[in-house]
Image (cartoon, rainbow, N blue to C red):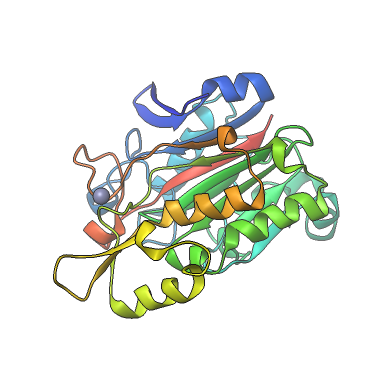
Length: 286
Ligand SMILES: [Zn+2]
């Protein structure tokens, strides 16, 4: 069930095809490879809000679904990501209130309406709604209850980690969808790792206050040489949070890749490039 890098046409993505086959849930992380954006956004940029040519982004998003044969009859559902711990739940009730059957997908995803819902995680129990979160360094986390068939896509930068967005997501799984924690799988995409995520003392102190009582800060942070800067291991913190919550270790999979010190040009990195595109994590019940 390991996540591997695979090539489909000229695109390179990270996924577990075994997971898809076993549970009929499609989940993967995109890279820069295989898109038509140019300049700073060179490659498979998924974000409209970064200043890329909208028609390139549209074509990139379409291509992502075409990689798995889903063409133009469904669209990627994305959020206006605001570094919060807010979650959008797309259930039958939400759809009835907001959409007609004809515009269920298009209603989310044209260039303007992709900004309609402000949140940093999106969940659904409805098949054929592909959920997408975007990032350049931020943690993109895909979550699936394989028994009750509920999925979530989560965006967690350092503020999201600090505000425990992942625990809010798990609470909705168990509270609203009656998920059992043992049925929940979690996938971590490429993101900025401890090797590159350097913060100042103010941010360090926020993490210290929030987490030092739960586990020794030396396990997730260390001082950068003789400076007043610190390296933080965000994935370690999220992992500890979800293990403590009751997710089984054998159901957690991590690409283990740092987007910032990647030398193959596979990823967008905000730290490295500032004005750049976004890769994506996508999950859909089939
Ligand atoms: Zn790194």
